[in-house]
Structures are given as structure tokens and as C-alpha cells.
Length: 231
Image (cartoon, rainbow, N blue to C red):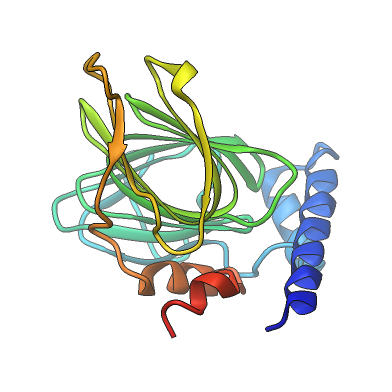
């Protein structure tokens, strides 16, 4: 894929998002928006749960393949469990022993709160900023792939590709805005009042194949700059 092709894909993705956003502003129910959005090819036809294993719950009830996931839902996974799902033009992998809360409207998740556990997400390009939250870190993203772990006193974030802004909850003045092409700058973010509240970290607990798989669920590929380093 050359640069012109990549720019054309980016423009089409943004146009789809703007049309989807306009559709969500009509006051239709989520199911009505979903029907119209899929008919217009604004979102992938297969929304909801694509893969899962082990004890996985949505709002406390057992999850099933094909079940719709939407803003307002709470995802929880047990030991050795996982779930892959799509909401709008974003795709997610939630790993074992996790609790994830989704906020937003209709088919657009604007905020994800990872209470505990592990989350890998890929996000379609958008004019609107999405936010990831843990007890110790706040992360703003657009058109990004990223992996996040949440522990009581520390968060781990790897920006697999794209652009993000990252800040400790207790020290927003330390906010960093940065970009990567291939897991270039993982960070630990602490919440215990230490002087160095963010520090470099290794790339760990996720693999190149995972964002590739998630992007495929929404009909995309990672950026060419990412693919060039793995193929």
C-alpha cells in the first residue's frame, strides 16, 4: 500500500465515522442505529462477541457468541477466560481476571475504565477523542492500537501504533503526547506519589498477531509502518 492509498483509506474511515455520528444524533435506539449503520457499511456487520472462552460475563450475565456489547455495559472475565468483541468500528480483547466498564452512546465508546486486568484495543479513526482510564493513568487516543494493564498501584500501557496522550491521575501536569509505529515506547504509570511517576517499560504480554486479528474483525489492517516491521 502506497501513501496515496493509505491517505484514501484514512479519509474514507473518517467519513464513515462522521456519517455514523450523524446517525447516532437522530435519537434512534441502539438497535435501529445498528441496522442502518450496517446497511450503509458504516460499521462492520458482525458487532458484538466474536470469540470467548471461560467464565465471561456482560453485566453479570453469562456472555454468548454474537451477543451485542454497547456503551453502559460491564465486561468481566474469570481465571483463564477471555473475550473478543466489536463495538462500532473498534475491536477489543479482554484477557483473564479483568473488569472493564464502557461509556459512550449508541455505537461509539468514548471512555473505557479498566478496573483491573488486561485490555488490547484497536480504534477506528475519529474526530472524537476516546479515553482509557485506570486508577493511576489516563490515556487519550485516536485511531490507535494499544495494550493496557491495570493493577492497584500501577498501570502498564503500550502504544502499539498511532498517537496517544498519557498522564498520571495524580500528576496531570506530567502529560506526554507521543506517537509510535511498533511498540516503541511502553510505559509504567504509578500512583504511589513517587518522584518518577512514569518510566519506560518493556514490551510484554501481547504480540503482533493480536492487533492484526482485532483489526481484521473491523475490516482494517494496522498502519503500513507497523506491518513493515513484522513482515
